[in-house]
Length: 408
Image (tube, rainbow, N blue to C red; front, side, top):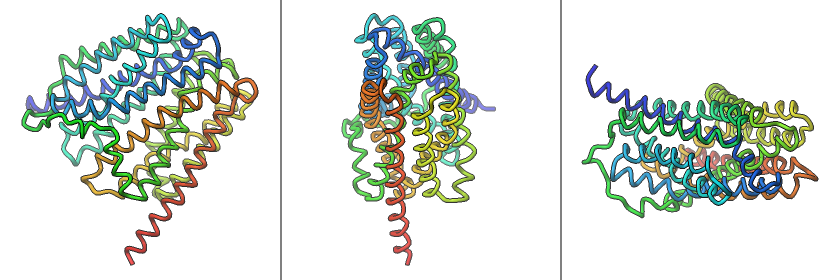
């Protein structure tokens, strides 16, 4: 084996390990962050609003920072950006672990939104070191790392949260610090100097990529479905932990295991069921089926009077995982190869906008209804998914008819 091949394998191994560590670090704090917020504000309902704002701050910083960080890595290389992100996340988790008040905690969430935006650089690194015919497998490896991290992170966070709501932050800092030290020793640069591109604010503009959606009517409609999908999904990040504690008396450990179960079911649906179902009924029908099943699952979660019925509602809700890959398939089939990157940037921007608006909205809904109708946020989330299913069916059907007419 040549030195280059060994370096190549070490680099891919580092990217995999870094992705796992980063996502585990993020997942660790999910079961305990709302609890820490509640300690500061002293109210479960008020904590719902604040937690929603914190999620929105994180998503907003990602919306602004992702294209900027990607362009910086185009000029200065992937290695320094990835390493700075790792050490930046480590320092940020320490900041949140010692935060004396909500303002410091909010600052920590904003910094986390910037440093975690390096995921775009991780994908760029994989493209640098992987030939085109093997990139799908490489991206699948990174995707598996993300899913695995989200399974392990909440479980570990729920366990550590039993020792105090700040303990998981220290663990997350250690993991990001290990990733930095590992990369400092192992990670080579992937972008040759002659292939680098000077930083441009035009390319780093998060709104610029969305122009593509306006040039294709069917993409505009499907992007609305994409927005609604992300919008409904943030009901979990905004209110789930507080809702579970208030209605079922679940602590960090129970919440952590449940979030891990959600991640495992999502891996099962996307990894094993999606291809089989699409082969049977096609992308459009699979998209509508997934969105409708998700709507039913969310409505049942809002209704469930006991914890066991809530867990049972996760079964139809897991089929929601069919929606994202089939939506991506429908959208990518409608642009040229040279526009695929711009399309993904536009989709990321749409998701980030939903990530800013949705948590604040659901946090507000929860605070207003927690006493009278605690499941209201889940009912609304289900209605949003049902609307997405209807819009998706109409838009995809029109696109198919247009294609059939063009063929004739």
